[in-house]
Image (tube, rainbow, N blue to C red):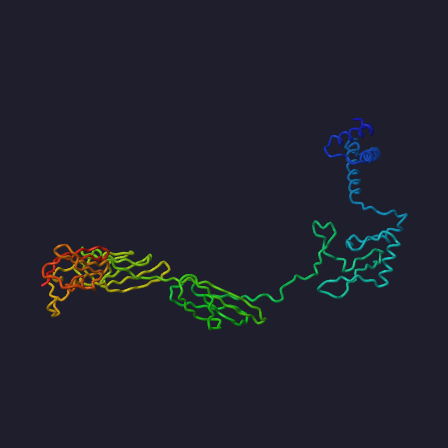
Length: 435
């Protein structure tokens, strides 16, 4: 196999390969490739054993890749060194890479370096002013033995934060501001937020600091006690506001308040005897409550807001009502009930009238009625003439004309009575004779 080396053909082939790639070839690469391939060809000629082993193409490719890699790393990492002809020897102008303090400009000449050293020898110090230290901090640089600027301890400043672009570095030496006199934690505690009134609650103040009670108020009224623990009587229904004002050892004022819901239940009831003639009495609670218990003559009779009691065989009864709400508040009322009939017994109505005798018997016409509600009595003569009328059972007929005239003649007279009993209108009529 013939190992003729054509450098121009290889250069053209390598260039076409790079141009077909997606990444653009930086300027100056082709010149480096030409130089590298020429050196690779020379190496291939002198190294006959490597040429025989890999061939001229293999030797050229290996040499080219090595050369390109070396050039690329050199271009990316090499710093822009100043010209030695203008800056003098490199050791005198080398600056430590750790010196990145933005407050100190880079010294790029012997004159500027000498000026910096003169200032250092003259004792010029830069004072850092913060709230934690009053002593100045020396930020000057002293040259090291090898001619470089060695950073001092003040050079180790905190890094620049993202987005600052090197324009601002926070002063981390500034302490976090704290409240030298924080408020005292004071809690007003009560044992009940809901209470059956009348009732009592316990109230007190919880704190680890020394405090002085200025005043307590309940619903705006000042309480006499100034203790930090007390018992309070609650008598009002609805929301009650408990307020306290205190001060701490530094004289600062604190105000606290709590609300207490006062609940009241009433077990009062009313009796309806409109059905008494039928032998029944209805008993109903005045206020609606979730839980009710009714006892008639000491025996449990029922529950609910209303009961209907059979009194046909009772002459009297005693009713006890226990009412409870959802919060557990309760009330009890015990009340006797007078069973009365709205019917007038005919045997109790007089049928004669003897006003002239004046013996205290049948001198007036009187009817005992079970109710005075809507009472009206009218008396007629045989010729249908009104001789007496009244709207009150306390005004009685004495047998004269309209109770203020001449005596009426003997004979029969007719009466009509109306009244309302247990919600029902009642009517009674009959005859009375004047003798």
